Image 1 (cartoon, rainbow, N blue to C red):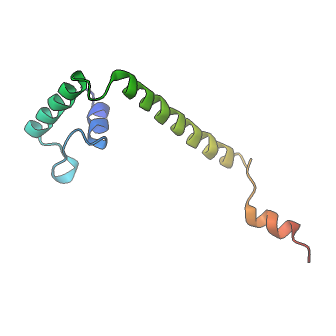
Image 2: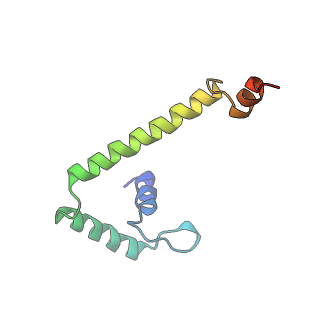
Image 3: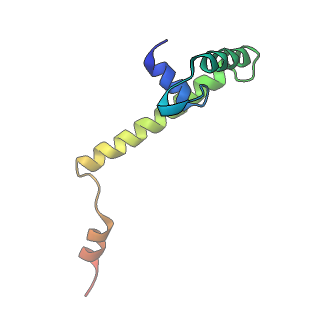
Length: 88
């Protein structure tokens, strides 16, 4: 298992965290096994999980696209527009 996968499982609440962002080995192994047992029993289908991953990827892509557009100066600051168009 990769380090990124361990962090993702921790972030998703599958693995318990101990002190100092560490994962207690025995409790983590048990939680990991229980998580995959529940998946196998159909508590969360692979299709649902795949759909959630796609939704997350789209949201992350949208967020990055907005950040990139802002960095390129494609957005206007509303205060500037308001003051520029205000009739004195």
